[in-house]
Length: 264
Image 1 (cartoon, one colour):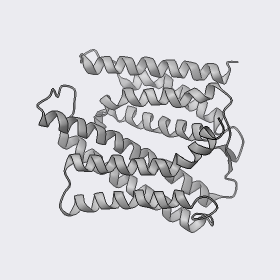
Image 2 (tube, one colour):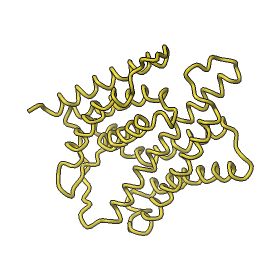
Image 3 (cartoon, helix red, strand yellow):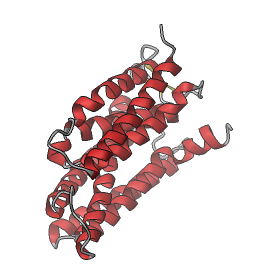
């Protein structure tokens, strides 16, 4: 039976190869281009197996260490962007996402730290965490779409080449839709966390809740302005990236310091 480190190495190599192939296909479009779904399927399945091995190893108790959570988030992001690459016009985003997947899988090759969380009898906590992960995935994808919006807008203003890039209005509509979906998920996550979790604003969690609410307020402002008077594609992209950065700091900031910097 193969060791987990060997499976992780295979997944990393697959992701690197797929990123290179798709990048080449984007630079030099061809009618015989390979489907991203077919290319990425082996890596995504192997990545899913690693997640099952690392996170869901013990019944009722999940290992939510920082590398495992990052790996789970990137797996979901990669799967969504791959399966919906035609409707989301996300072909340009796939290579960097696959590279990020290769990076977050790397800790699986070593015996990294653990952060066990017991979900037995904790339905509220399970729903809160699930919604938080889904909302973050949605906002992460929105931030990636925002980078694409900025790139298209920049090339339009400077008369740069647009070959291989989707129309700006299409991507901007998709960005707005992703922000609305992510905002609803984030709102539900905050509400359920506040209702079910006694230590939502305490026990070392206060800064996370405050940063999450700050990110929520930024998203609310963006969506309200866009609904009332409309917001330019560039400005929406900037706000999306800023709010996603705040949300990342809320979810991973303190744990990165504790689990990575202080433990090294």
